Image 1 (cartoon, one colour):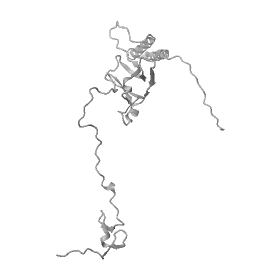
Image 2: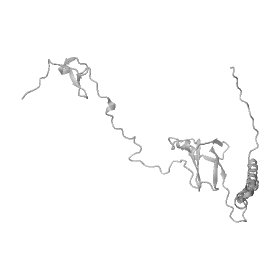
Image 3: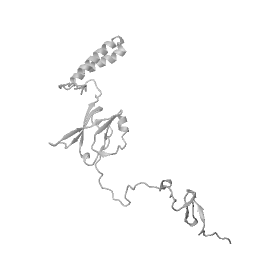
Image 4: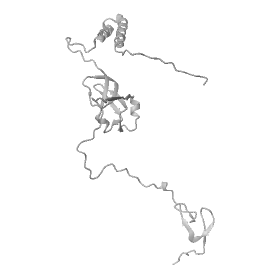
Length: 235
């Protein structure tokens, strides 16, 4: 049976450089090319990446805590005893009912800004809130979610209450006294659309005037200071 020679005195041409090298010093690369051992290039590791599994998250023999950690969640359905129409301001209150109580205002963000938040489950001190209004409820979502330290504190919420239904004619209207003329003018305006269309424009002007007068009573009387901006064009 024929056998191959060991090639002690033979030469071989390198596929890479084209030079002749001793036959026994030639090696084959992963591409199938024969090159001298001084020209050998290993296979790029990124061509055959090793599979990487997910990081372990839980313990095989774990004993869960008897009580869950204190965390803050979205307010449940109908979270307020009175019907909330809209939320005005929310403050994060620390050291409640003590002499060291302090409030930090939260910034109200729109739905798009909250939806663009990458990790909505991040923990920390709340700094933003998003209000979502439904037919039967109003929910407040805060971000970030309070951590173990912040969860024991409170949120102070200022909101606009929805007027209760009148019910029986003997019931008192759930309206501040300064808004009663506005309520009467508004009712007259809407009734005029059906029973006296020729007076609708007149009732509308009266309604808008009474509404503006009532809203001005709710404003806080405070001083306003206007400072002009200083501009030095030649400096």
